[in-house]
Structure formats: C-alpha cells, structure tokens
Length: 192
Length: 285
Image (cartoon, rainbow over all chains, first blue to last red; front, side, top):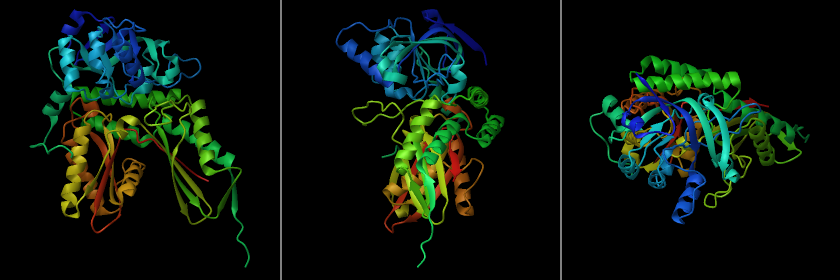
C-alpha cells in the first residue's frame, strides 16, 4: 500500500490526489478541537465574531489529549469519535477547513458538505494514543485553556499516520470496506 | 456469646491501592490483549485493517516501555468491590477512599480527566471523580477490588433491550449482531463484546459490563454459552467492518456472555462494547 505524504496547509492538488482507503502521513501544523471547542467556535460564527484561529486550508484533529508527563510535549493523543462534531462540521468547512481527523461514522450532511467544499475526512487509529503522541513535536494551547483536555491546541506533527475515509469524489472507505469483506446475505432492520 | 474479632482495614490503604490500579490499568491491559492482536494480524486480510492492527500492537509496546496511557480516553473509573463482611473499614468511608485514590491516580499518572459534574451543564470535575462503584458484601475477611476504566467511544455504542422469552436465542444473537453493525467503526474495532443476559433492567447492564472483565482467551465455563459466544463472534466477524472499520475479517476479538436468572416474562439483553483493550486491574486485600 502506497503512503502519501501531506504537508499542511493543504492545497487543492493535495486533496485531488487522495482516494478513500489511502494511507497518509501528515506533517506540519494541525489544530485540535473536540465537542466543547466546536460549540464555542460555532457560537462565534453565529454571532459573526472572529475566530481564535484562521481555518483556511487547515486540518482539525478531534482529540482531547492526556496531560503531558514531565519532559514530554503532549500526553496520549488518539482520535475521538467524529460523529459528535457532525452538527458543527459544515460550518467549519464553510470557514475553509480542508481536512478533519477523527474516527468513526459521519452524517450524510457532513459527507455532502465535504464534497461541496472539496475537503476530506481522515481517520487515525482509535486506541493508538501513545503511538500517535510521539508524532507530535510541539503543542501549544491557543484558545479556551479553561476547557483543559478540550482546549484548542496548535500541534506541529511529523509523519502523523491517518487513513482517508471520505475523499473529495464522494467515496467512503467505511462503506467500501464493509462491501468488500462482508459475508452476510441480508441486512436486518435497524434496532428499534 | 463471644464476639468474632473483625479485621480492620484503614481507608488510606484502599486509597493507595486504588491510585496504583488507576495508573497500572491505563498503561498496560495485559499480555493477553497483545497476543489477541497478534493472532488477529495473522488472520486479517485487508491491507488497511492490517496496518491498523500493526499500529495497535506497536502502541501497546510504546505505552508499556514509556509508561504512557495506551489511550487518551482513560475512562470513567468503574469499580467492582467484593467486601468481606468480616472486615471493618476505619478512617473514612469506602466511597471517599476510592474517590481519593482516583483523584491521586489520575493526577500522578497524567491520565485524562473525562468526567463532567452534570450531564446537561457539563463542567469538568477536574479530577475524574466521582467513580462508579458496584459493591457486593461477601462472606469472609478479604476485599477484592477490580478497576475497569471505561472509554466513552465504545460505551456510547452499547445498547439494551427487553426481549420477549419467545425471541429465544435467535433474538439474542440478532440483537447483538445488529448492535455491532450499527456501531460500525465508532467503538474502535477490533472490539470486545460484553453481553448480559437475564436479570432485571439494571442488572443486565451490570453483568454485561462484568463480562468485559473476563480475560481474553477464556470462554464461558458452561459449554452451551461457550459455543454461543463462538457463534456470535463468527457472525460479528462476518459483518466485514474490520479493524477500525476500514473493512476486514476481524471486527471483534471476543464475545463474552454473563447470565443471571430471568423473570418468567422477560429476556433482557445488554450489549456493552469495548475497544480491543478491555482494561482492568485487580487487587485482593
């Protein structure tokens, strides 16, 4: 499997070259934000106020890291479940965000917005927090320090590993993967 | 009648033990987890799934070598306490002693504080307390404390249903498989599936959680349930979700079932999902 190297901020050419299922390594600056930070950013957007960061071309990583041990940059820092950010993601895309990193399913509205804004959704390996923390070279809280683990941090990462889930062409690795490997005949109805 | 002397245990001893368990369980989940992942890697066919498994195996090695929490979600602190009824606790309450241990363990271990004081107001308590404590009074003069930190991602995909007795074993299997399918990539597969069967509404959830405490590689002692666990595991792995939901053969490492007698009208089933690392630590005092 070929690995594609990406440098942030991302360009249109970078995104055009990505397909669902690709393995990528990200280097450069990325920003952390999860539930509470998204809520605050969305409130600022609704009020027409400036954001504490410029999202154009940027990558948001859904993570709430552990506190750093003495002498370390950051504590364990794996992805959190992205679906909780679905409500806010189209807004972030309108602000120019070009990629988000998390894990797990996205809503139809998010997938549509990704295609519309020519942006991608990437997954890092959930549960690999210790490994992923070692790809973070610098970490600085840039907004909402009162949120603790949920504060917005600017991270400088090197060869941060992720997998493309949704590319700009409308492909979805979660759907493709199940189609390729499922051994079942029929789907049961949803849990009621 | 002569009084039986009670064994005395000091609350600070419980606190120290709990702090130690919090650090330990969050760093290393046990050799059986690494073994199960390595076995999964030999069976996984999907390239993206294999890459995810390799990262999880390397992650366990890094966490252990560098004494880092294996995952940033160091969980809600859940305890199962079996308290020998001949033991008298001095110097404070059990609840306070455990919470103080959590406070200390999470601070000293650089573990994430993931608890908000109120489900709707959502302000972080700052020290990962309060813990969830399940206490059982048992015969004897020993204390057994089990700590199982529970991450939110997999907990959120758990489900409970009061089936009808006529739904039978097929209904149970169907519910478990549907729950795993709908969870998809969210609970960080490969997962461990804890299944509670029987009891009441609240009891079935507790035994589903207890099912996750069983070390990987051990089947249910009753051959009927051991076979049912195997059948459910096969069905779950036919879903094709694969490691991290990237597609593949290994969606779950194990299915563990715990049962309890049921009401004549009820067949409660609870599915408590966990990521690959069903973290726990145990101490006997």
